[in-house]
Length: 154
Image (tube, rainbow, N blue to C red; front, side):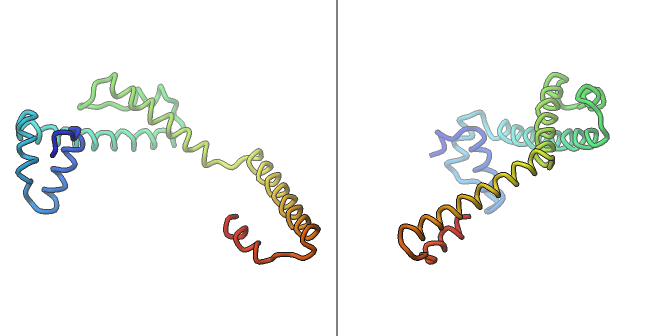
């Protein structure tokens, strides 16, 4: 049953079983033994936990140093890791720094965004007025019941 699971899926299934029932199913234990044994599997789980804690720590440092106004190179020089290699650490810092910069730029409201919003509001008002006018011309009366779905869609 578990032979088609990836290692990550197998870890997730095993962890869920241990968390909820306190013991693992016999079929998952057989698959773990086929993949190198329970000891190796538990070491892999522990290593993933350590990597998660380290990535959270480094990410928090990146955010903190970025708030202080430091550049990418300055952040790279200030953050170190006893767990990861320098190459892995630098790649992680670059990736997360870029994502954080994109997140910050996505949150900012500038003049261009405000002007585009106003243009969109004006165009939507014109289009709505046009549709309502067209329905009055074609049907000679307004179908206000048809406006209810339009209200919910918008």
